[in-house]
Structure formats: C-alpha cells, structure tokens
Image (cartoon, rainbow, N blue to C red; front, side, top):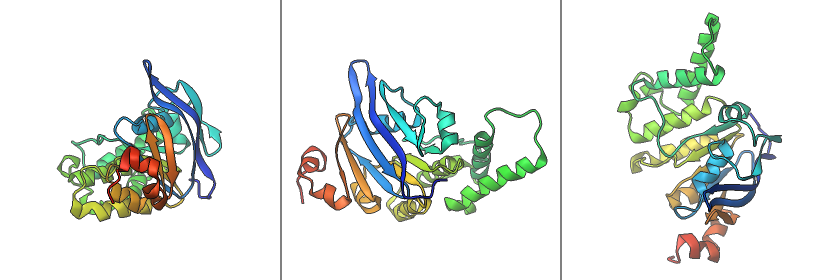
Length: 252
C-alpha cells in the first residue's frame, strides 16, 4: 500500500458517453495519498460515472487513468483491484445468506485467487482467515462476526461492504455513498471508520450529506454536467459563488 504524500491516482481527459450524451466530459485531476476527497454535485453531474470510469466499470471514450504511476486504463476491473484500487457501491453488494465473517473470508479468497484452485495447502486457509479477521477488526464488527449479514443494520451492512473493499489492501479507495441509510445515532461511528481507514490511502467519496462532506473531507471536488466546476478546502467551496449558484444554494 502506498504511504507517501505523492500522487496516487490521476486521470487525464476522462470522457464517458452514453449515446450522444457525454456523462463525463474531459475530466483531468490528481489525487494525493493520505487525503479524503469529497466528490459532490447535483444529480446527473457524472459523479458515479466518473467513479465507474476510474474503477473500470465504465468504458472510456477517451482519456487515461494512472494508479501509483502505472497506466491502468486498459486493465480489467479485477486487475485494477489487484493493482491497488478498491471500490464500494451505492447499492450494498454483500452475501445476505452468509455471516459477516463468511462474507469477508469469501472476499479474501476471491482477492487471492481468481479461480478455484484444484488443491490448496492448509496454511492458505489460515491466511484467508487472517485477512478476514484483520478487516473485521478494522471495520469494528467483531461482535457481529457470526451474525447473518441480512440481519445487520443498514449502517453495519455499509461498513461490511467497505470491509470487502479493504480486503485487497488498496492504496486508493472509491466509496459511493458509504453513509447512505446510516442512522443519526451511528453517523459519528461511520465517519470515524472512514477517517481510520484513510491512513496512507487516497479516499474518494460521493456523499449527499453536505454536513458530513464538509466535516470529513480534506478537499472537495465539485462536478456539474460532467465537468469539474471547482475544487478546494471545505471553507473555499462553501465560499465559492459558482458552487453556491450551481449546487449548494445561497442560503447562509
């Protein structure tokens, strides 16, 4: 995992089109290690599409994506994950019929082996369990290790999905609405989780709760109509007239 303060993720002239519509129109941006970036903008601004382009879930019409100095533009989703790019989604993707620990063990196995090996030394099973238990502790769900995932609160399900993304020990983590559906009583705990996992990583998150975005982000990137409108510290974004007019509104 990258630990420096240099550029860990860079995109140049990213373009994604659906038919004649440019959902992302020439986005260029660098992201530094150890920082949390809030990606905001009105619905339809292209935030999730940009995240999909970075993670390989959307086909580029043009542009280049670089991860830790390596061009990953043509790599598959799985190859990008192995290169150090983690991703969570708006819609929680967990195995509801399995326990929390089983979800993590299955995820750990998938990250280590793309296909089922014919034979595996016993020590490898221990490594998979160690990976799962390491992440279980990181996300603070040890007490729920043997609980069925379908019985978790929505907030704990979101934490589990973040845990699945952490299993590959990514240097860059893309989080699409990681706090969606998290109750007010669990909000601070969820924010603390994101702050803890950022150590040495780049975190790019989409979140519609502006209070949370302003509280947690080192830098905020604003998108409108598939393009970057502005970026800066939370205070700078709050004071930016163009951002207020396009997205935040003019109420004090």
